[in-house]
Length: 376
Image (cartoon, rainbow, N blue to C red; front, side, top):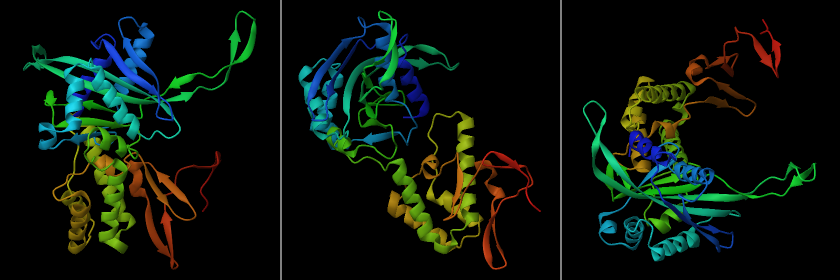
């Protein structure tokens, strides 16, 4: 899926556009027991409650593709004949009306999912989207495709804070009792994927609120497939491939060049408004290293390391390799942060045999909020 297709689906969860008629689910405690079931008709809920349910489901399609939203790919054998694909298909094909399939799904999730010491709300909804054809002028020209899909959201339920409240009948203020508050989803998924604006039964789109906590136990139970590397794992693997190949040659200059060139690619991609995800190959990063004067054998070693860690022919997501919004240097004694677009002002130099990190100090400075002037 690309960003445009994702945005097209997310708009379905606006109250004025939604045709979702029913929300199903269950409320689960820390002992893996179902406290209560959810079987709510949006038609009889208050507007506020309906919007809150839709908002939770919409958030399970939030975040960044390749980071919070990752593709789950089923094998041909799984699609042809597997317990996990049959269950997901039964939920979708019955529009979630198959109570037996719902209960089987609940138990599969509950028995596997580790939510720590938090109760949680497991929500399911079905939607049938009449996908409009795109005319040459960009307008909609009717529909000849219906995209039928289910969306799932797993939301932690937490105790609210005890707050001071006004009790009108007593004309007094008292501490109000804490309530159970449903938090935004920690994980969820869409099945099937919406690829090329049509159903792709070979893929699902999995959501994780925290890119470094993808709940592999949930993926194993529901999809029985290995998820792609998380964003945190990709960054760690990239750093390891780079430092392992360059060793002592991994200098500030090299780090600056890699960060700046990848940051520029990310900015250009955002400005282009294209829906396709941004990718870069190890060979393209290798050319950046070559431009920095890194030896050919080290560049080759870096590309080989990437092949071992990511797989041969892998493409990488630049946003998962660097923090494009930050450039930070950490030493045992100090941490230096500069605007990413100004990383070039930092340099290293040896003065009287001592290595220094230098930053121009021509402008006024502040020390703990106190304006100071740079000394001579």
